[in-house]
Image 1 (spheres, rainbow, N blue to C red):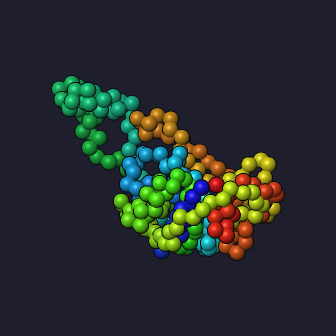
Image 2: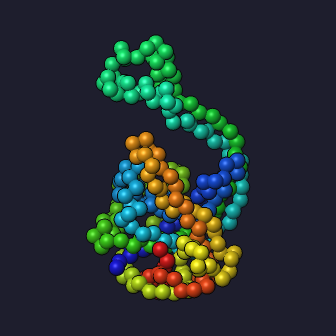
Amino acid sequence: MKCLRFELETPYLVNFRKPFSTITILSYPFPPYTTIRGLLANSLGLERDDYSLQDRFDISIRPLNNPARFQDMVLMKKIKSNLNKKEADIIKKLEIAEGNLSVLSCDDIEILDKLKYFRSSSAPFIKEFITPILCRVFVLGDDIELAELNRALEDPARPLYLGASDDFVIISNIKILDAIATKCDKIDSIHRMNDDVEPIDKRKIVGRVPYKFKPINIKRRDYARVDAVVAAPTQDSKLELTEPVNCYEIGDEYVSF
């Protein structure tokens, strides 16, 4: 088995939003699984709703620093993009009629005219920022696909970012290494927890993080988020668990996927 390993750095302040936070937009201390998959998909030039990477690669992360946190007031504009049933029916009528407006009633045309304008609202929020992060990313997968991903990270199809579209990243030290299956109770990466194994130091439990997306209705771009409860090592110490778990020895690190 092979593993693609690289280091990821954010040069500026960043927010990896916890999806359950609302008025105060909280941040994870490192990018979640879904955020890393989005970065990889962007490097390969995949479409927005292409989640095929979830089945092609397994991902893990090792935090390499302990970012500081602070909160600030921000003004955010929310753009409503979802159509209600009436609006969706009008759009469907037009698609069937190949754009012929004569199939619409006067009321339909009035509603259609309103769809030309973005529906948005602005409101102040408290947003949590973390100082620049540094982490090591591990990607486990097929040898040929890992080689393709390696090339994409060195020469990405689109500019790479994490979190918001202007949160650019620096990627360095890209290597493909051997991954040897083993068991260990001292892990260098984050670990998806289960009911049987826990960290000895409960303070290392990060909580629920977005793990992947499950399709409900692909045509309507409707997906459900699947979360995982994870624990993470600190910058200077491994994650010690109550029992050995399945992991991979990659270089001198023990990585849990």
